[in-house]
Length: 224
Image (cartoon, rainbow, N blue to C red; front, side, top):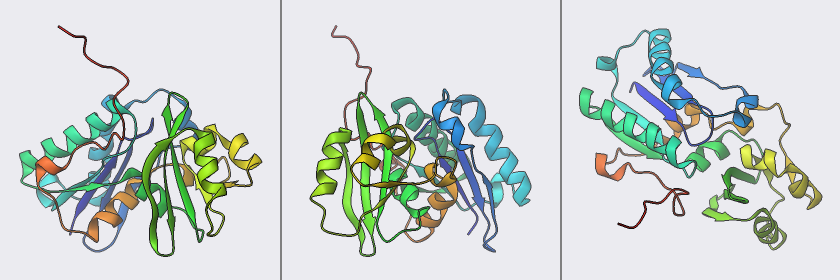
């Protein structure tokens, strides 16, 4: 199966094309870009085109698109998911929704893995994964609330990664939680892991590929 994977849940744009022969062609963003303004609208389509060219494929050769559905930034998720659904409709491709936190955890190498995405407003999105699978499903909390959960956790002390782990490194390390090295691409939600997670599941109906916001968006329409 030739699969396109994208993720726009954080400030960086991640794209991967995984060919049916197992070869992967990936745009791995720089970790430093997590702290910069997002550029999904100008980066996503050119990145998709570049990775398809590297893979020697066109849209007609693809079998499907896997999209990171968050949680993450409101605008970023909408851009990625709208793009995935538009490509699926235009080229008759299957679609896979993939948890961005699960993809983040998939890139970590530790018995227990704490995926942490910055949710702004003094909060984080997080999930905990261990050898049994998903120990804590995605949730939103303050860094202090997350630490309280971890203090009650009876399993292995987790390795934390993600832009949320970078932002709140001081608080997490003070509580005894190891955070991945600052320059490690472990902190990036890589589209390679979006592809790999999708490849192990069945595709979804297009209407099921929707953002997982976990909370109301920052911007709300005014009452009429």
